[in-house]
Length: 317
Image (cartoon, rainbow, N blue to C red; front, side, top):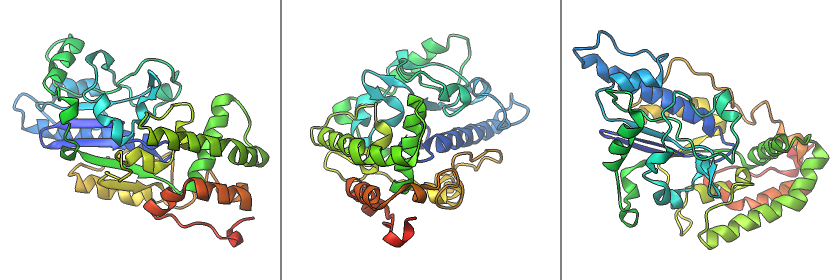
């Protein structure tokens, strides 16, 4: 999850796993850095605006606005903090000041990807004015000004953003990720076995957690149905802007324009391309009629809610 707060700008990005969310987080963070750096050009004590290559530390020192960017990451107390669902947002906002780690690192970099997922939470970015080196103390003072009673949380004051993906491609991508984490090779037979035997139990467990209003377990979070990530307790989706991974390169610039944020001139969209399916995952060849039907049944609402077409038998090899 990524939260941005400043004068006139309040954004929450709900990070659905395996939907190019890490890439969008990087783009949003870079765009915000450029946006608030440009505003410093009116500062008579600054000779020129910051370039997008400057560090987060530079921005902390020079930005005249109060800007906070919370980049939740890692697993803590049985919750994957990178993937907090909409309905549990109030439980993790505002963050505990002890979670703040002032760092120039950005989730999605090589360092972040090599994280140990059972480590304590790392809030990767805190963008704010700073006049001395006592950043942690300043963080506590700044966050205390944003304390909100959880029972009185007004979520409507935020703009909610998320990414979605074709369920067929997403599940195969999650399967490959899961095997890499377990150091197990991926194969067509392995995927077929996983979908037929394990995936059904995983989704049934998430359905139970949703009905009982329990936070989703982190072990198989990459397989959670997308609608559960963006819905309230009644199952009603609450996001304002949805980016489809298959149209990422067209929709992200449009999103930034609607949010009045600049499009970074330098970013590498390494996770997806402007065609479907992404070339790194030719998922069709890994499906047969049985696995196709299982995925369609388990993720029925994702197909319907986000407008993805189900495959016909003629599409399978």
